[in-house]
Image (cartoon, rainbow, N blue to C red; front, side, top):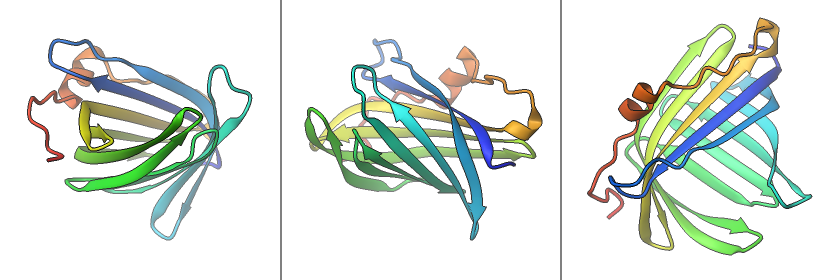
Length: 169
C-alpha cells in the first residue's frame, strides 16, 4: 500500500425494521501509513454549508478502529468488537454524549486495498438511536485503477443486522 490513497466511507443507519437505511457516503483522497502494527489513515472532510473542514485520523488493527476528528467536528470514537465505548461528539450545533457497541468487525487486506466493515449499535445522550454499519475502503494510488467497490445491496443486508433489542443496555 502506498502513502497516497483514495478513501471511500459508506455508512448505513437503521432506526427500526420498518425504516429504510439512510446511506451516507464520502469519497476523498488521503494518506496511509503502517507503523508499530497499526494502520493509519489521514484525510480532510468537508461539511455542506460550512467553510471549516474536519481533519480525520483513523488508526486500526484487527477488531479495533479509532476515529479522531478535529476541526468543525471534534470527537474521538472507538469501535472495538463486543465492547461499549463512550465519547463526546462536538458539533457546531452542540455536544452529544455518544455510545458505540461494535457487534461485527471485518478487516480484509490486499496488496493495494484494505476494507473494513463494522456493524454497531449507536446511542446518543444515553438513548439507543439505531443499528448502524460502516464500510471503509482504502485504495492505493499505486494500483492506478481506483474503483468504487462498495458492497452490493445483498452484501449490505448481510452485513447489516437490524435488531429489535438494544445491546447497549
